[in-house]
Amino acid sequence: MSSMKKKLYIETLGCAMNVRDSEHIIAELSNKKDYELTQNLEDADLILINTCSVREKPVAKLFSEIGVFQKRGKKGAKIGVTGCTASHLGEEIIKRVPAVDFVLGARNVSKISEVVDKKHAVEISTEHDETLYEFTDYRSNPYKALVNISIGCDKQCTFCIVPATRGEEISIPSDLIIQEIRRAVEGGAKEVMLLGQNVNNYAKRFTAGSDKASSFTDLLRLVSEVEGLERIRFASPHPLHMDDEFLQEFATNPKICPQIHVPLQSGSTNLLKRMKRGYTKEWFLNRCQKIRQMVPNVVISTDIIVGFPGESEEDFEDTIDVLKKVKFEQLFSFKYSPRPHTQAAEYSNQVPSEVASRRLIELQSIHKEIQEQSMQSQVGKRVSVYFEELKSGNKVAGRTDNGRLVLVDGSEELLGKIVDVDIDRASLTTLFGKVVRQ
Ligand code: SAH
Ligand code: F3S
Image (cartoon, rainbow, N blue to C red; front, side, top):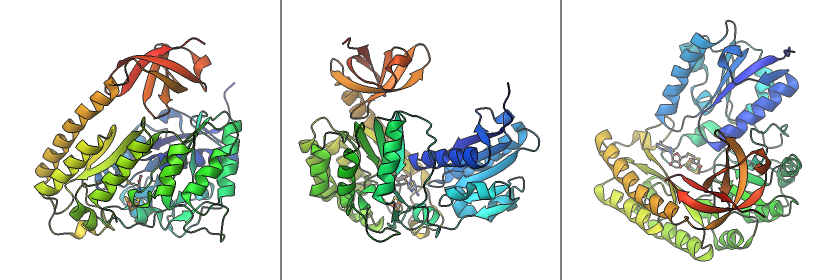
């Protein structure tokens, strides 16, 4: 029997925070507005695109996607734009494409059921406070739960548009966080990923005064007390706030996974200053060396921007130097993209695009060797894998505690289980192996 519910199609661009916002939107619309999710654009009564604005490329993608929606979507289907580009372009989106029905900013997710039926509604206030809002529980993957711990960002990195789209940083009360994690664990999740733009700045400002947790380290301790929860990850911490107390907790709390994202941006102290990152090359190296000493099997990932205004060959050499010293197992690297509402976009010494492209290629090729070595070093090892997704050809995918992707032959009986695997082969991104029979 076909259901009478209206159908929702949602495309999510950008970061894990957007993935979680999309989950909130799906939950709100199915509980309050009788929508159900579809994977088919052609069937949808409502088509949403949850956008990213961190670089120019995903913004361009928004407009090309709206064209596709208009062409392939059902006649009369509504189109809504949500997320960071909604926040920063607002009404302009409707002016440019009047077929867009409404625009909802990244800090206004809880208002989705209000705007969905209002033609040309625009809700993009970055003053809006969503920290006390209890969202319902839709999860795209029941085995690992994304959980927000703060909204917005108080840093003003000079390249970054996020503070303008997501607003000031406010922490979510730890009681709400713990409640949400308990429910996720009851629903089958053994793993949680704590999300914030700057997680280790947690507890600097709450809406409702004080809180049980007075730091991110405190929050980690509270979260690790949740029974049935086995793996804790978080993204992203800021290198500046990685104090020794945090490193100690990271290294010794058995539920915290030995995986950490330490966003470098640049290895040049001079450039870091102009990015307003607040740390030096030496501090960054010191933190990473300390992490490696304290957590021998740790996997460290990073973000790097090349071609930031004024980046000289020497500055770039500093970045390469840090890459070679820390040997990040995983690298997300980007060409600098000037963004509206940011200081760096006004700087006069923009780096030519060809120079930035050459640096990006060089950086990535050095990193590829590091990654290859790191993956090959896993062959022959026995690792503990949490299985979370079925893949085609009777394969099941999971992650090691330090976050490496593992594929084995198997079926759904592995899903949601943590099992030992013997690794017999590695590609650049994936480990392959056999489940150890108990
Ligand atoms: N605080 C967030 C950062 C969000 S932006 C976090 O730690 O996850 C994600 C990444 O995009 C940044 O770390 C940075 O490397 C990159 N980025 C941000 N602004 C950029 C810009 N203008 N051009 C190129 N890359 C950018
Ligand atoms: Fe952006 Fe810096 Fe915040 S990168 S999200 S302003 S920590």
